[in-house]
Image (cartoon, rainbow, N blue to C red):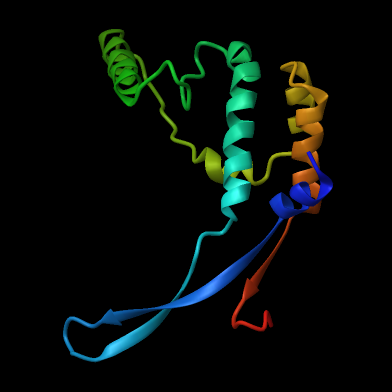
Length: 150
């Protein structure tokens, strides 16, 4: 990819727009500021392409127990598996402990070094890994509060 295109993926500006809203209790109009998306559409497109590309390489490396966020498993499958497990533990009169983890928040604290190693172990092409590393290292963002960009 051309370096300028990569630069556009890395950096995005956030326009602040105002929307007119009516208050239901009073007939006054109020202006509420609201930010349009956190990422440029171009970056979202790149992220979507990378996600599909990575899925091709990582799917086969996932253990069968890892059913979350996989195309071959639905929410119904997860619920049925959980109900079956609870039922079996009750039959055996054994204690069962369940935990629900917010992996989106956990992902924010993951070591990038471990992430790069995992991509390498999944045979992700080095060009793809380098592109992702470049985005992580050099991405910037700014909020534009008025037309002058201050």
